[in-house]
Image (cartoon, rainbow, N blue to C red; front, side, top):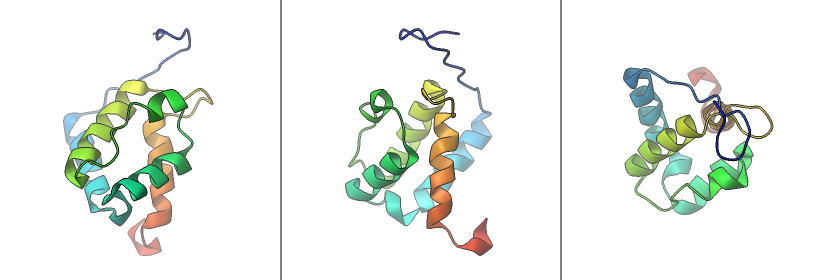
Length: 101
């Protein structure tokens, strides 16, 4: 399916249970507690500017996590071919202990 910008979107439908688990995971990350941390994580993921502008930074952590997962899933693939949700999940590895992976 092509989006309005003429590129292939390739959004994935994830089971609700998996979406909820990802949201819970994001809710546990200390970097997601405030606007500065939220922005740092998103910028480190290298998301498309078009997607970054859709993310409402500064929301409470639980609300931000739910909105973020929804936006990332809906967006699908980034211009560089990576999946938006996977790109953010990859960056979160830097913020958890090695025994948690």
